[in-house]
Image 1: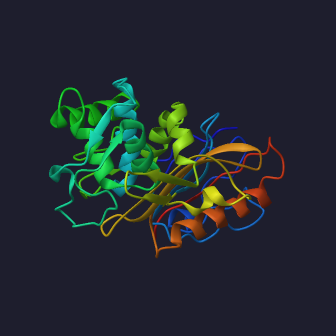
Image 2: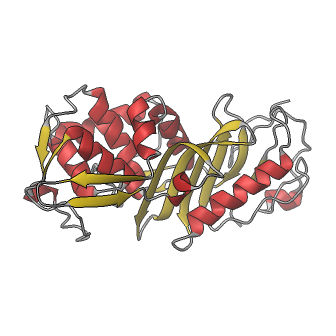
Length: 296
């Protein structure tokens, strides 16, 4: 049977599980429906849901609104594609695309001209901020209209606790809850091009002077043990290391959200630990398990 939404954390299960104990309410693991304890994650906020039926398998502070860094670029990509632009149109990196907020580096020099398709490739796969900025500045109605469209799109797909102020994620005011990001991943998954680009392991960009190699910022897309259908990473100091994915685990399509993971490998280690835990405790494609954890 399904559990009703809890006030602090959403945990849904298609199995019967006992009511929360006093210990679990105090912030400890509720694992009465699980054969083994869930992993301790470095991520401050995390959420795993079944893409098909919305069942929650794991939740940790999913309602906390947090900076999301370059996870933002999934919304940027959807807004670009929703405008149905010419993907072959040439766009140029301009001075206005240079990051003056954090002075982040870029391999795209001012004056570089690429197709819109190539800009989207680099923005999503390698998290190139200048490419994301160029896409927004090339929006038919202008840059401010692009930002407005990002927030409008968020409302349309049910992201009620999200804010977007720039297309790159460099601004810490770009913020959302893990619950909202799970909705964004589900929405982005409907775009064939976003799925294709975000799961590409590497890409070579040929310019008139040289060939530049780019890699996906999520190393798991190059790992044969993973079946990933969509991916995006993010990092700024305020957000920590973040990762969202659509992946098949134990024959189920799952939406995975990890925010503010500790250390550079924190998000990868958390994803691997969660994958192993689900595989061990969900041996069949029909046995759904659920657990929740509230920060103590």
